[in-house]
Length: 77
Image 1 (tube, rainbow, N blue to C red):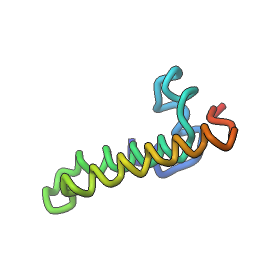
Image 2 (image 1 turned 90 degrees about the horizontal axis):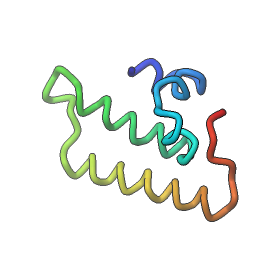
Image 3 (image 1 turned 60 degrees about the vertical axis):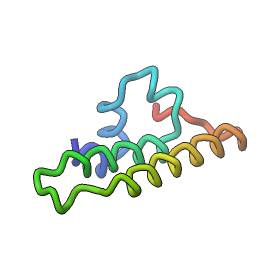
């Protein structure tokens, strides 16, 4: 999963459920997926704090809202 998140657009596209992928901007999806992967770290010290998770999710929501406002394409296809 980490490789698909940090890798190319095709990897991200294949990881995300199509209805979600089509409704969200690439940058917003990448932000959410990156924080999710960090939460799954086997090493507890590498996991983000609750505050870091919240900040990243709020940031992803702002990115998503901005992409809707400026008319940018949201599909990863």
